[in-house]
Length: 211
Image 1: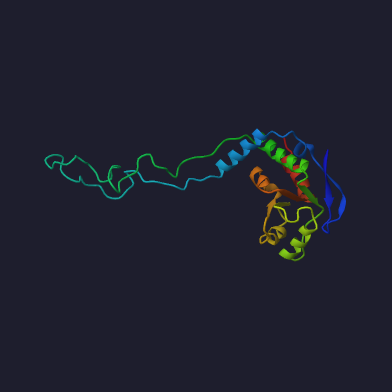
Image 2: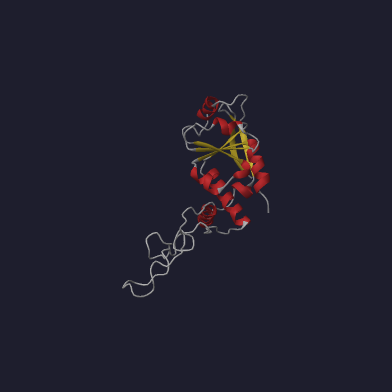
């Protein structure tokens, strides 16, 4: 079973925290991780650009001029794409679908690979507990200064019910928080270090280590 040094809130060590091999001891496949990143990015993408077709633009209910005898080219509507102010042909539409399919087991493997890489590269720090009687940014800053993540781009993972840490971390540069039930490949890769509480590690083991 994989393990990581367990720290107290004052920065001293308190033995080791065992982690499930199924999530923290797998073989890393960069290709699968890349596939997961692309799929997650595509699935979170929404189409913003939207052009109107000739059936959606204003005006053009009447024929601009008679068919013959004017010496000009024949036209049936000012909404034609060749007119200024007319509809757009083959323009971007808001109903585009960018989603990519990736099965659950593959996503879970990719997540385990990123967690494994964090542990193997010594960029995963485990904390015995992280809770505050009073939500203050200064208190959290003092805690981080005593840990190996001091001054590093760090993602703090806590149990879903622990709201105080996310509130305290809002104004700390290079630091963000994430509940353990919302782990994803992109957020883990965005940060150099992963700071995880003991309760969150147990939650992750139970929540994601499923066949």
